[in-house]
Amino acid sequence: MSDPSDVPARLSVSAEAARNLATATVTPPQWDEITPRWLHLLLPWVDVDGGVYRVNRVKQNTQGITVDLLTVDDGEPELPRDYIDYEQDPREYHLSTIQTVLQTHTRITDLYSNAIDQLREQVRLTVEAVKEREEYELVNHPSFGLLNSVIPSQRIQTRKGPPTPDDLDELISLVWKKPAFFLAHPKAITAFGREATRRGVPPPTVTLFGSPFITWRGIPLIPSDKLPIQDGTTSILLLRVGEKQRGVVGLQKAGVAGEIEPGLSVRYMGTNKHSIASHLVTRYFSLAKLGEDALASLDGVSLGNYHEYVYPTA
Image: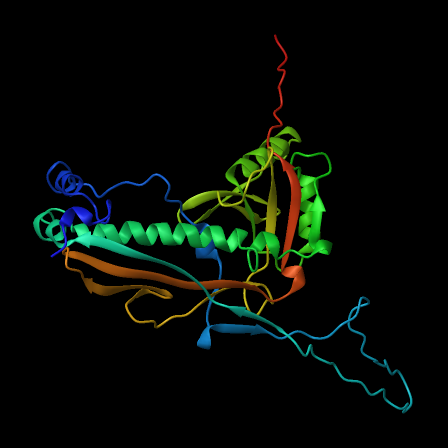
């Protein structure tokens, strides 16, 4: 029999930590890095069979689609004949996977689950970490992430650095067919609020999911800390969403074994000779942009501009 001291450290939560959770508090463990993840809530999600989602597009040239049409006011002219061709090699989106193995010692779950279910809390926090990683990938993934899915013609730069109402209006002009929401780092949203207030047009608010969001032209600005900040600048995205709107959609595979919610599963893998139980946590997901004009980006958004207000004295 092998020496238990050969077991690598930190394979499971420690007994002391579990005992403190069970006897010294009645609250579940708090994790400050958990965010609301509004992007996941606002994206329409499509169930993908076979793990592949194909986006079929119409073939077009730089002038767009040209169909020979005739407007007739009188007479019986010969009608034009035409057809619309399709791309022969449409893009396919394959579901990505986020996985980890959660390990818990059976002694911990047996002895210290009187007030709080130790396994349930371990699973909950692991799932939260998976969801945080998912939102990061939805924004930053090199293949399908939002930031890397914007075509050059849908990218604009700020006029002077700070995000102004004029800049967001330009962004709306690029995604004018049913824009759904802006997506921005919280610091970018506050920077826009400063610029709008400076110009005497403080943005109104709207309540979604029980929380207030500022808006511009009726479009909410949704915060996400997954948009990167580099050298004091970031980007603001504008999305159209939904399959019927030819917008951005989330992709997932529902109905997998051990599913606790669509596309997310927790499966028991067994208990080893050191009494450590393992659970496989898996999330299948991706993101697809159905129309090139469904996504636009305002780049070079400066976050450090502040204004001094001088008030007249009596």
